[in-house]
Image (cartoon, rainbow, N blue to C red; front, side):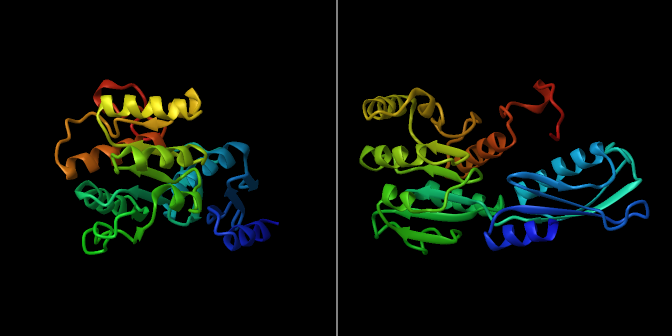
Length: 256
């Protein structure tokens, strides 16, 4: 059943991880982890739980790894040695608006491991020469593109168009998806006006809360590159369910 489940996930291009024990205690024991849960037995409930958590962390970044645990999943043990294979299609980063900030955001998105698409309705701006680091540069009306694009919980949507004729229809479509991150550039005044238009268009308060705007973490960013770092840091923080403050001022573990 494990290999059938793995094959089904791979055929569907869905994220899935397979953990295999390499030690002499239970050589070849396997655990498969996908969006619907985990299946298999590595030797103990604690070890299954610890390896599932590690597999999900590796799926988030699309990496394979050798890991060691104690017999019951203790992080400092070495009795259980495992190879975890993460089969994760790259998550999508959709950047709307082909501007200077988009060029920097596309470059940083690639470093984070995203498949980066930049979308703009204006052919003169939406060119590969202007955004060379993007995987794709698409000339399309933003809301129409997103309505037919692949969107899942790992998807990040960054709206840099800063124009209500683009922003409002686009954000309505974005809020109808399960994207894990929706950010929109603009001042507090700009976003307040945007919120009123969305509210008047029937968008609920809970959906409005999903919009990260003004976009990014408060690091005093001014240049396109600094702004891209601010946005990227907010994406990572939300992906990790963190607030994004200074580590020295927090009490949570450095590595979740």
